[in-house]
Amino acid sequence: MTTATMNKSDLMAPPVAQTIQQRSLVIGVVAAIASVVGAFVAPESFYSAYLTGFMFWLGLSLGCMAILMLYHLVGGAWGTVIRRILESGMMTLPLMFILFVPILLNLPKLYFWARPDGLSDPKIAEIHQSYLNFNGILLRYILYFVIWIGMAYFLNRWSTEQDSIAGQSTLRFRAISSIGLVIYSFTISFAVVDWVMSLQARWISTIYGMLFIAGEALSAFCFCVVIESILGKRKPMSNYLTDTEVHDHGKLMLTFVMVWAYFNFSQWLIIWSGNLPEEIPWYLRRLNGGWEAVGIFLVVFHFAVPFALLLSRQLKRKARTLVRLASWLIFMRIVDIYWHIEPVSHKEFHIHWLHFTIVAGIGGLWMAYFFHNLRSRPLLPVNAPQTLRLLEPTHE
Image 1 (tube, rainbow, N blue to C red):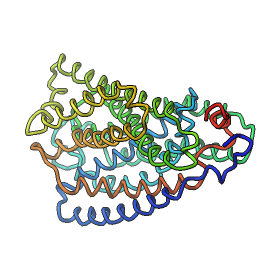
Image 2: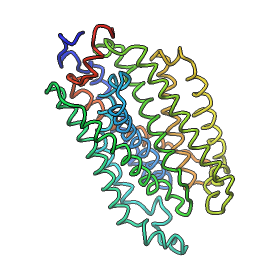
Image 3: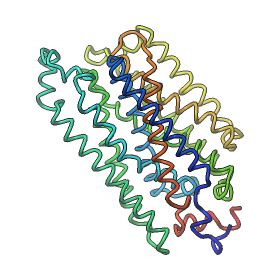
Image 4: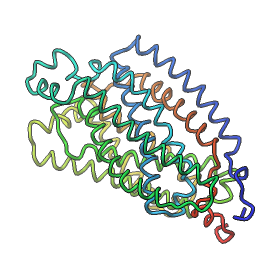
């Protein structure tokens, strides 16, 4: 394919995308029904499991948006080949907006500060009055999603316009992305404080939001590797996805594995060296009752083993081998979020079938929406300068 012969129909997603969309929808609906039943059968497990599933899939949506904005700032073929994957991922944010409602309507089931008995603690009562209360959570939840969906809407709309109008400037993409990455960093940090950190309302960490930012970026790259491994076997992606772009994605996975580990080690080191009563309870809760095994599991299989494997240039250049590690890291991202949330509700190690059905239920709906978005446009923005360069014969 060359720039002379390129047209939209040549770049549409293959039929396998529709097949996966339909199967994902079926899985999502069935798992969602099972999860709703579980909410009545095992409410003590449902809400923490729901928050885990919600935070993972929200993180994937936001990670796609953040990586897309990074691409608009720095450019490169690595981002051109996955640009529409990232755009389709970020445009699932309206679904995540709706899926937060069960959490909003059941705050006392999750958060100590939202229960009457929690207000007997003067410090909790003070925090509740000034910041952590229903009205505050509601207003900030709306604000976060208005900002996120607004940025995603304009990035997506302008990208769609590029398919119809040749010669458009890319300046507006860079302009919104430069400020958008800053806004994203602040808003997700505050959202994580509201929805996850406040599970232990008296605990503080100034680096906590960065743990999720690094994890969301890693999730997005791993997801892109999985999707490109599916589509890369078929036209049109097989025409332009090369080992070079796959290698770049592998290097970026390695980068964010290290960044995630660095932020986690930094938080641990600061809290360990300070040894302050208001800081150590978070780790004490997660290093006892069987939760320490999950922590060790994360150290070994979220960092050490992936880090060692991603040092291999050969592994990073082959999508069919890299996809296995990417799939594993996606699983480890769920385990990491589970380790952040679940020990608050259960002091002893606890896992329930709802953890699987909720992740599958939200994930099935998310994937169906994602593939709907992906199938609605060409897999490359037709008139983008980067696309024209990518499809030059010299690239083939």
